[in-house]
Image (cartoon, rainbow, N blue to C red; front, top):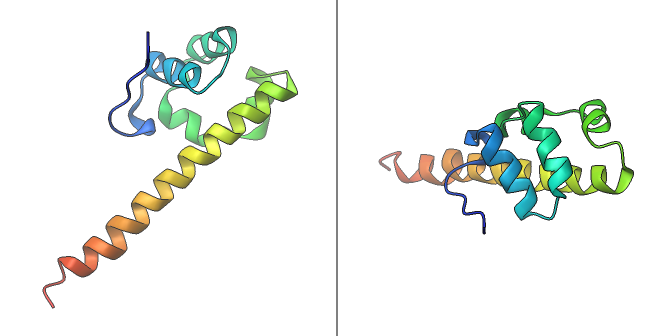
Length: 94
């Protein structure tokens, strides 16, 4: 089944986060470990390197998950910038 995500990563449930990780190339076994540890999208964005070492003991998997996390954080930063700068100027009324 192909994963379809609508909305923000931070809004994903444990199940949704596991599905999202699998859709990005993370093995089923590791995604299940994230689910078992109740990692939601919000928790995923806040995970530290130590957290990742605990859940993803294999270096290659940890690197992949860290890349996914960085991409998600970058998307969040972009959206924050867009909404605060661009829309702030648009609605300023000037």
